[in-house]
Length: 297
Image 1: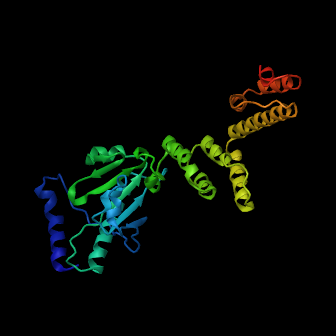
Image 2 (image 1 turned 45 degrees about the horizontal axis):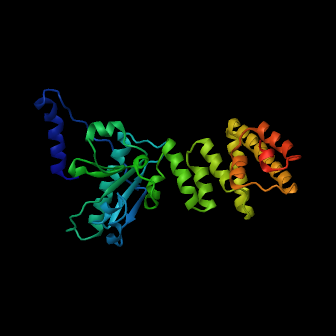
Image 3 (image 1 turned 90 degrees about the vertical axis):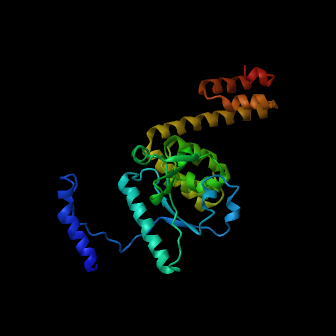
C-alpha cells in the first residue's frame, strides 16, 4: 500500500467521527484472507445461440463467456454473510479475468446464486425483481446478480441442475418427477444425498424393485436398510405393504388355478385394495367361486 492510500485512511480515521457528529466512525479493516477464493463452479458459454429457447435463467447467459455459480442447497446458509462472501468471490474472479486477459476488457463477471427460496432479508434490503418463475434480478446495478429460487422453478428437463437446490415438499415433488427420467444409479444417489422426506425416499427406492446388477442391488438394499433404521414408521409401513402384496399374489394364484381370469378393472381393484382383511376374504371366496365377480363380492 502506498503513502497516498495510508494518508487517506488516516484522514478517514481522524475526521469521520467529527464531521458526522458521531454518527459514523472509522475502524481499521480486518485482514481478508484471500489465499483461496473459489466459487462452486462456472458455466462456460460456448454456443450462446442455443440458450435462447431454453427456460430461464438459461437465456440470460447468452452475452457472457462464463457465469460464476454459487450453490446454496437445502440446509446451507443463505444469510447476508453468505451472500457477501459470494459477491467477494465474484469480485476476485473479475479482477483475475482482467489480469489474465487484455486490461481493456470492460465486461462484468455474472453471478448466479442458486438456493431453494428467496430469503426475506434480501427482499427487504434489495427488492429483487422477478422476471421469470424463480428468477430474480438483485440490484443495485453496480452489484447486480441473479438469484435463482429453485422451489419456484417449473419442472423442466433443462432446469434439472437448478432444481437440485429445492427443499421440503418442492424437493419431494422434484424427486418423484425426475426419477422416471434418470437411471437407477442416479436416483439412488439422489435418495442417498438429498434431504427428501422419508416417505419419498422409500417410495423412490422401492419403485425400481430388485435389479439384476449385484452392485446396484447391494447399494439399493443398503440405502433401504439405512432408511428403515432411521424411521420405524417407514419400517412398519413397508412391512404392512409387504403383507398386502403377498396376499394379492396369493389371490391371483388361486384365480389362475381355478382358470378365472380377472378383467383389467378386476385386476386394478385387487391392486388398489389396501385392506388386508378384504384381500384375505377375497382369497377364501376364490377357492369355491364360479366367477371372478363371486370371488371379489
